[in-house]
Length: 168
Image (cartoon, rainbow, N blue to C red; front, side, top):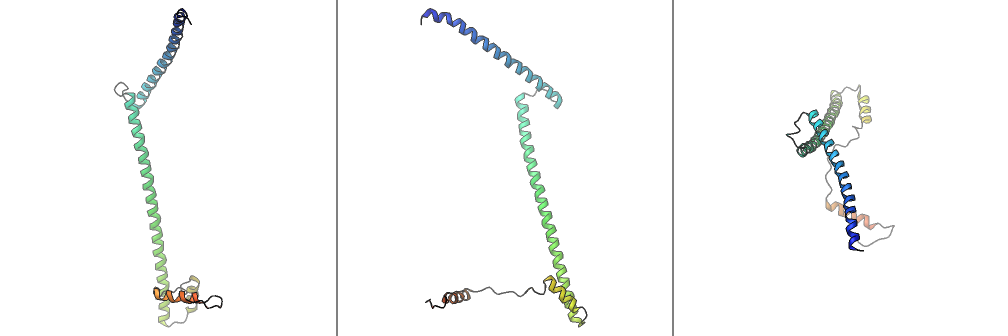
């Protein structure tokens, strides 16, 4: 290529570049003006002075508000769940207490019948105790097994292997 060819091509290349750059600038300028109009309308709607508050400051405040708002919503949900959980626990506790009082009342009623020596209603109260399962409950405290008892039980179970004697 010749130096004269490059000199002739340079003005054409700069013309094409300048034309594309002007078109992009006009598009960006139109978009900027449109954005400013929308920001002014937003300022009128939310009643703040768009000249005193910059776009960056407004959206920074809006972002921090949104973050704090979402945190508050989460905290409110957690608090509501805890209140519901406590309410359910309270209801369950009251129900258990009521059932316990009813059992004690039935037991006391059964004991009172036996003390009086009145034989009427004994069968009814015994049947009721059987149906509720109160008569079948074993209220004695069991002593925990000691290690000695467990060792003896293990030795016995090891010594029986299908009729064969196995040394221990």
